[in-house]
Length: 200
Image (cartoon, rainbow, N blue to C red):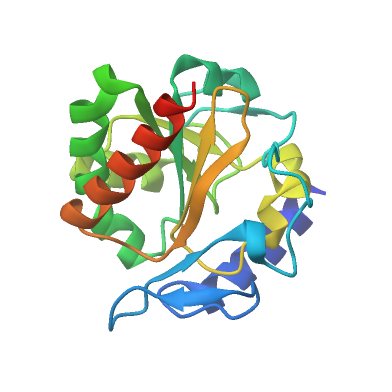
């Protein structure tokens, strides 16, 4: 089963990395590049009509370093920035140093950054680790599991895709498709943190 999921998911993402995705509706361009923001509250393919959507559901997986992990990871911060990336995806890798900097700068402000490696199903993957080391992206990275795939990731059409969730795993803000530079990410993070912390 894992092998079938891996082949299917990698095929989809190979076709989508760095390209525009029109599979999820209500897409608006944010600049002239292939970057998009999708507001899933307005999409035809939304998971629910309610505001509180636990986007990743209950799951068990492993970190890249081999530690078992569940949805309880989201309880560690006001907001978790989940960046879905692949070892074959250049735009993913290019933005990882920015995410590493944001992870450090906003850790005390209520944000944690988590990477989700879309094409790795076993911990301690050599290629993933080399990328993490080279980019300085030393925040937590989660490998793909059947739970994660079946709960949500099968819907992802393009990477990098970044999703923000609160302590309960409910999505907040917008789903961001495509890479961003540090300035763009900082603006997005500031806005979402303010919204969530103001409403706490």
